[in-house]
Length: 210
Image (cartoon, rainbow, N blue to C red; front, side, top):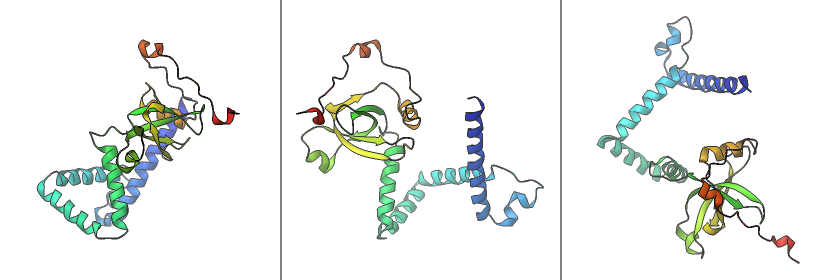
């Protein structure tokens, strides 16, 4: 219990640093590589180079010249039949998840899935808009239902707001619970007023009806 998490964390860090170093080493000319001049290899060089490159990219994207180059590049990519679809989808996902004003994955909810009486843990991504909201009478919410133990895969559900039970736990605690398969249970963080509210009433399942 003590050495396991520490050892796995160190092992993952070493693997990530080694992968970055080996990737950057193939891109650098041999005469610029420190291993050609030093008797031992220098770990972390790839991480430093990647951080410098990302910093330069951010600096260029913040000024007029960088934004102009980005617009030109997007026009070129937009003329490619298959690449433009992949690029536009990835760009929309990154902008939605990483934008400072985004509220994605900021709310943990319970949703009855796959049938009435069985509850699943989900994450609210956003309010449903566009055609899906237009063809439904209810106020629908986008809910991402992750799978265990891999939370990166799951299902996208469009659930009426009245059918969701909002939880007080944080998103981090919810993800930990999903990954552990319920072994890690976060403490009850509800306020006394929230605990005084009535519980969610049980509903009759369709399979129980005569």
